[in-house]
Image (cartoon, rainbow, N blue to C red; front, side):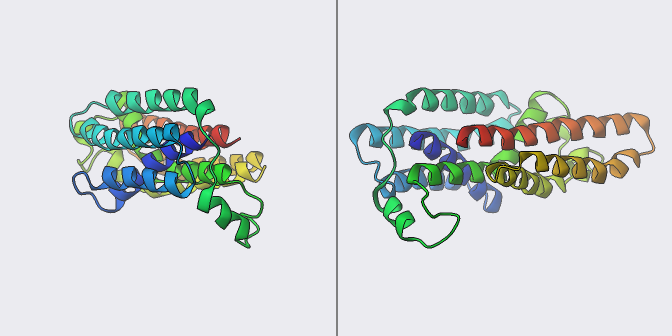
Length: 243
């Protein structure tokens, strides 16, 4: 499971840095460096663990570049394909991964926090990676799927009349709701997450019904539903990984 955690951390850090400071190659380089540093801190120093860390760092670099080109050249299938292939490959190879430990496990053993008490390094890294994915990576996946399904035209993202501009609150609301759903799931209260989903639908309902043109209403509704379901699947998928 440690290799899966490294992949999630690498992708999550890359997208998070990109959302804060967008400079060429900076996000993916930070993400790749984080993968290597985390592997060393977690005691993954065996030759195959180090090799896996290097490969995952390379995948992180490729992810950042693919996302940039996927949006810039309207090729969402490229980053989506890379993500699926990377996850399948890492999951298939995970039985050869050593358990995480090292300085990270020593720190977890000494820290006096209820949430971290008795937590293994593998579990900590996996939850950390899944949490990072709920933030900017979830938004990236939503945008890629919207583009891939032509729910809205990627060429019209910046026009004032398009829903991407008008429903921009989803960029903040999405990470918040995914974190709440993910946190409730970890706490064993997944049923309570349905309240979050229902609340979002109620809050968006007036917004979706306030348009004068019926065609515009249908477009906004489709955009909202597709984006919301993809966002929820990111949170639920992360729960499956850490389960």
